[in-house]
Length: 203
Image (cartoon, rainbow, N blue to C red; front, side, top):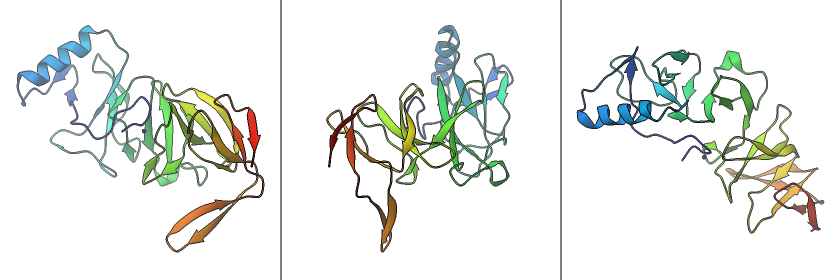
Protein backbone atom coordinates (compact mmCIF):
# COMPACT_ATOMS: atom_id res chain seq x y z
CA UNK A 1 0.00 0.00 0.00
CA UNK A 2 2.50 4.04 -0.53
CA UNK A 3 0.76 2.19 2.75
CA UNK A 4 -0.69 0.67 1.45
CA UNK A 5 -4.16 0.96 2.58
CA UNK A 6 -4.68 3.49 5.24
CA UNK A 7 -1.05 3.85 6.17
CA UNK A 8 1.43 6.15 4.45
CA UNK A 9 4.97 5.07 3.62
CA UNK A 10 8.32 6.59 4.33
CA UNK A 11 7.32 10.17 5.12
CA UNK A 12 9.23 12.27 7.64
CA UNK A 13 8.35 11.05 11.12
CA UNK A 14 6.91 13.41 13.73
CA UNK A 15 8.68 12.38 16.93
CA UNK A 16 7.22 12.80 20.38
CA UNK A 17 8.64 12.50 23.88
CA UNK A 18 5.84 11.99 26.41
CA UNK A 19 3.36 14.83 25.87
CA UNK A 20 5.90 17.13 24.21
CA UNK A 21 6.64 17.44 20.52
CA UNK A 22 10.22 17.86 19.46
CA UNK A 23 9.93 21.07 17.45
CA UNK A 24 13.58 21.51 16.54
CA UNK A 25 12.56 21.71 12.90
CA UNK A 26 10.54 24.87 13.45
CA UNK A 27 6.98 26.12 13.42
CA UNK A 28 5.84 23.69 10.73
CA UNK A 29 6.24 20.79 13.13
CA UNK A 30 4.34 22.64 15.87
CA UNK A 31 1.47 23.53 13.53
CA UNK A 32 1.25 19.93 12.39
CA UNK A 33 1.10 18.75 15.99
CA UNK A 34 -1.58 21.33 16.91
CA UNK A 35 -3.72 20.41 13.90
CA UNK A 36 -3.44 16.74 14.74
CA UNK A 37 -4.49 17.26 18.36
CA UNK A 38 -7.31 19.70 17.58
CA UNK A 39 -8.75 17.29 15.02
CA UNK A 40 -9.68 14.93 17.84
CA UNK A 41 -8.50 11.90 15.89
CA UNK A 42 -7.62 8.48 17.21
CA UNK A 43 -4.64 8.15 14.89
CA UNK A 44 -1.41 6.58 16.03
CA UNK A 45 1.93 8.08 15.04
CA UNK A 46 5.17 6.20 14.65
CA UNK A 47 7.96 7.21 17.02
CA UNK A 48 11.65 6.37 17.10
CA UNK A 49 14.16 6.48 19.94
CA UNK A 50 15.55 9.85 20.97
CA UNK A 51 18.21 11.05 18.56
CA UNK A 52 17.20 8.67 15.78
CA UNK A 53 16.59 10.67 12.60
CA UNK A 54 15.67 7.82 10.25
CA UNK A 55 13.33 4.87 10.11
CA UNK A 56 13.59 1.60 8.28
CA UNK A 57 13.76 -2.19 8.68
CA UNK A 58 15.63 -3.11 11.82
CA UNK A 59 15.40 0.38 13.37
CA UNK A 60 13.38 0.32 16.57
CA UNK A 61 10.09 2.20 16.48
CA UNK A 62 6.64 2.13 18.03
CA UNK A 63 3.38 4.10 18.14
CA UNK A 64 1.80 6.73 20.39
CA UNK A 65 -1.72 8.12 20.45
CA UNK A 66 -2.76 11.78 20.21
CA UNK A 67 -2.19 12.31 23.93
CA UNK A 68 1.38 11.12 23.63
CA UNK A 69 0.65 7.85 25.44
CA UNK A 70 2.51 4.79 24.23
CA UNK A 71 0.21 2.29 22.52
CA UNK A 72 2.86 0.06 20.94
CA UNK A 73 6.24 0.20 22.70
CA UNK A 74 9.35 1.05 20.73
CA UNK A 75 11.02 -2.17 19.63
CA UNK A 76 8.02 -4.49 19.98
CA UNK A 77 8.08 -5.12 16.23
CA UNK A 78 11.08 -5.47 13.96
CA UNK A 79 9.79 -2.62 11.79
CA UNK A 80 6.74 -0.35 11.88
CA UNK A 81 5.96 -0.03 8.18
CA UNK A 82 3.20 2.56 8.50
CA UNK A 83 4.11 5.99 9.82
CA UNK A 84 0.46 6.71 10.66
CA UNK A 85 -2.21 4.23 11.72
CA UNK A 86 -5.69 5.59 11.12
CA UNK A 87 -7.76 2.41 11.22
CA UNK A 88 -4.96 -0.06 10.54
CA UNK A 89 -1.34 -0.32 9.49
CA UNK A 90 1.45 -2.76 8.61
CA UNK A 91 4.21 -3.96 10.93
CA UNK A 92 6.97 -6.51 10.42
CA UNK A 93 7.25 -9.27 12.99
CA UNK A 94 10.44 -10.37 14.68
CA UNK A 95 11.51 -13.95 13.85
CA UNK A 96 10.47 -15.19 17.29
CA UNK A 97 7.00 -13.67 16.81
CA UNK A 98 6.24 -15.51 13.59
CA UNK A 99 3.95 -18.51 13.80
CA UNK A 100 4.09 -19.47 10.12
CA UNK A 101 5.90 -18.57 6.90
CA UNK A 102 3.28 -15.93 6.03
CA UNK A 103 3.77 -13.98 9.26
CA UNK A 104 6.58 -11.78 7.97
CA UNK A 105 4.39 -8.67 7.76
CA UNK A 106 0.94 -8.30 9.30
CA UNK A 107 -1.82 -5.71 9.47
CA UNK A 108 -2.85 -4.49 12.92
CA UNK A 109 -5.57 -2.15 14.13
CA UNK A 110 -5.19 0.76 16.56
CA UNK A 111 -5.50 -1.65 19.49
CA UNK A 112 -2.60 -3.73 18.20
CA UNK A 113 -4.82 -6.63 17.14
CA UNK A 114 -3.79 -8.69 14.13
CA UNK A 115 -6.14 -8.38 11.15
CA UNK A 116 -4.43 -10.41 8.42
CA UNK A 117 -1.08 -11.26 6.85
CA UNK A 118 0.28 -9.07 4.10
CA UNK A 119 0.51 -10.49 0.60
CA UNK A 120 4.15 -9.81 -0.24
CA UNK A 121 4.64 -8.21 -3.64
CA UNK A 122 7.51 -6.17 -5.08
CA UNK A 123 9.42 -6.02 -1.76
CA UNK A 124 6.44 -4.93 0.30
CA UNK A 125 2.72 -5.42 1.00
CA UNK A 126 0.52 -5.58 -2.08
CA UNK A 127 -0.57 -2.32 -3.72
CA UNK A 128 -4.28 -1.42 -3.86
CA UNK A 129 -5.85 -1.84 -7.28
CA UNK A 130 -9.36 -0.45 -7.73
CA UNK A 131 -9.55 -0.03 -3.96
CA UNK A 132 -8.67 -3.65 -3.10
CA UNK A 133 -5.38 -5.35 -2.32
CA UNK A 134 -4.39 -8.96 -1.74
CA UNK A 135 -3.91 -10.48 1.71
CA UNK A 136 -3.09 -13.94 3.08
CA UNK A 137 -4.34 -16.06 5.93
CA UNK A 138 -2.12 -18.24 8.12
CA UNK A 139 -2.39 -21.09 5.61
CA UNK A 140 -1.20 -18.93 2.74
CA UNK A 141 -4.54 -18.63 1.01
CA UNK A 142 -5.16 -15.33 -0.76
CA UNK A 143 -8.08 -12.96 -0.37
CA UNK A 144 -8.73 -9.22 -0.67
CA UNK A 145 -9.16 -6.31 1.74
CA UNK A 146 -10.14 -2.71 1.07
CA UNK A 147 -8.22 0.40 2.05
CA UNK A 148 -10.08 0.66 5.38
CA UNK A 149 -8.56 -2.69 6.38
CA UNK A 150 -11.84 -4.58 6.04
CA UNK A 151 -11.61 -8.07 4.56
CA UNK A 152 -13.90 -7.95 1.52
CA UNK A 153 -13.18 -11.38 0.02
CA UNK A 154 -12.06 -13.97 2.55
CA UNK A 155 -8.81 -15.78 1.74
CA UNK A 156 -9.51 -19.01 -0.11
CA UNK A 157 -7.50 -18.85 -3.34
CA UNK A 158 -4.13 -20.40 -4.04
CA UNK A 159 -3.47 -17.90 -6.80
CA UNK A 160 -5.00 -14.46 -7.31
CA UNK A 161 -4.21 -11.42 -9.42
CA UNK A 162 -5.08 -7.75 -8.73
CA UNK A 163 -8.46 -6.40 -9.79
CA UNK A 164 -8.72 -4.88 -13.26
CA UNK A 165 -11.99 -3.58 -14.69
CA UNK A 166 -13.97 -4.81 -11.69
CA UNK A 167 -12.77 -8.40 -11.90
CA UNK A 168 -9.81 -10.53 -10.86
CA UNK A 169 -8.42 -13.82 -12.11
CA UNK A 170 -8.07 -16.45 -9.38
CA UNK A 171 -7.59 -20.19 -8.87
CA UNK A 172 -8.48 -22.49 -6.00
CA UNK A 173 -5.75 -24.90 -7.01
CA UNK A 174 -2.41 -23.67 -8.32
CA UNK A 175 1.31 -24.19 -8.00
CA UNK A 176 4.33 -22.00 -8.42
CA UNK A 177 6.87 -22.30 -11.20
CA UNK A 178 10.23 -20.58 -11.30
CA UNK A 179 11.81 -19.09 -14.40
CA UNK A 180 15.24 -17.85 -13.40
CA UNK A 181 14.71 -15.16 -10.77
CA UNK A 182 10.97 -14.92 -11.51
CA UNK A 183 8.14 -16.98 -10.04
CA UNK A 184 4.72 -17.41 -11.62
CA UNK A 185 1.57 -19.44 -11.03
CA UNK A 186 0.23 -22.31 -13.04
CA UNK A 187 -3.28 -23.70 -12.83
CA UNK A 188 -5.72 -25.52 -15.08
CA UNK A 189 -8.73 -23.98 -13.34
CA UNK A 190 -8.53 -20.20 -13.55
CA UNK A 191 -11.77 -18.25 -13.24
CA UNK A 192 -12.91 -14.66 -12.72
CA UNK A 193 -14.53 -13.12 -9.66
CA UNK A 194 -16.25 -9.81 -9.05
CA UNK A 195 -15.55 -7.42 -6.18
CA UNK A 196 -17.74 -9.49 -3.86
CA UNK A 197 -15.88 -12.70 -4.63
CA UNK A 198 -18.60 -14.15 -6.83
CA UNK A 199 -17.60 -16.25 -9.82
CA UNK A 200 -18.39 -14.44 -13.07
CA UNK A 201 -16.56 -16.41 -15.73
CA UNK A 202 -14.33 -19.34 -16.56
CA UNK A 203 -11.06 -19.45 -18.41
